[in-house]
Length: 182
Image (cartoon, rainbow, N blue to C red; front, top):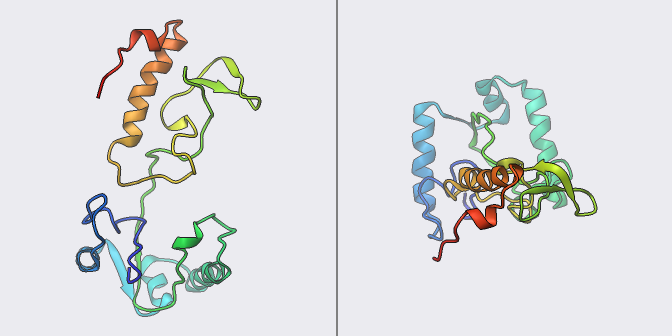
């Protein structure tokens, strides 16, 4: 937070408008509210934080130490976190929150052509195989998901789902769906 780079769960998403200036004060207010509500846990030691969240303190500390090694190395070989946002976890207080996983979209997926046909390794359409929505790959380019763009995952599911359905049924989506001039 102090470096002003944010990124991740709530940082830069609850209080910062897209393209707006980062506000450390606003982010601290969000964090304080989450601690008060019991949504985020706070401790001056990693062991204390581990106990609060029900983790084995030795395993938790070893995990943080491994992450810190990767930060010093400047290359997250374990999970591929971008180097410019690697920040070691060394200065208390330490925080943890519960993250409940759900699939909004994915950065990878199956490669497809403009007709929503899945492509093989030689970039040739696989007959009868179409893809749309979160399973369609290459949508986010460099493998990074802009989490602050509301509806981007659902929008592509609806749009490309319709196109794939028309094409899979033998129609031509480019002819059947009118273009919109913006």
